[in-house]
Length: 366
Figure (tube, rainbow, N blue to C red):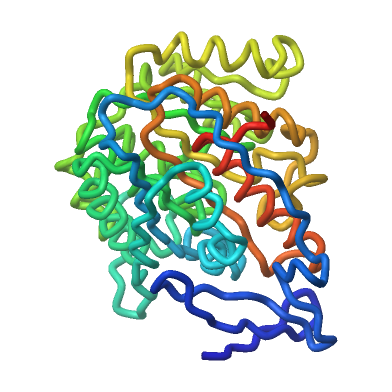
């Protein structure tokens, strides 16, 4: 299967290949350069060392990773996030996980609903773009994540935009309602339709799983009524630096623990993670990682870049500390968008996303 797309003014070809029974895509330009071609030097080879970190007792042994592709793109206005899961796979995801001692069950990509002129509109106040197909897509994510979690697998969900976080957190909450959520993001993603300035639903997933919006007023979201609500005490933010005024009011009113980049500067990333893990101690952990938490110097190919983000090492340390807690049971990696920026931008961002996943799942320097 070959599909062409104009990306950054350059015609590139998305070439579908097969990897362990899952369709993945490698990118090539008309000049003949290939993505993830080791001989051509397009990809910096990283050493992946299994440090045998503490393993949660709620996961099966030997350890099994469920990889779920959630190629959602409707939660934000820029095309390309739907290519994120396949690009991360094509960057040797399976090989890295195998080298870390994981058996990999790759469930492929969820077939996300497309918008239709017949889609129901928002019933309540405010605005939300494409609520019905996003809601139905997140329900599919929720069901798949819940099933894999209940089977004792480590669940790795590859986005897609961050609206899928409503589905991943929903599935985790149905399987392990006591789970603590570590939300690594430049943005708070706790808008509701009534306060959202843009109506983009990748900025709303936490408000939905916390019950700040009535599910029946959002077409496609009635399934949330059966999901245990996420308590403010179960949520910690890391890396915030672009938060809407209305979201600030919500964070303060609910008393949610939020470490902005100010706190990263003040305490250091080690201090931030110590406080995070202390706050969520004795809970299973879910790490939802938006690549835009990382400074765009290191992860430029994403839709809502904000300067002043996590450094290369800070970004890795967040994942490493979560993995070493012995309580991490699931990870999201979202908002990688290969359609934005140059070839080098995409390569660096995909590599960064893969490296963070590897760090969370056991990779260390020595």
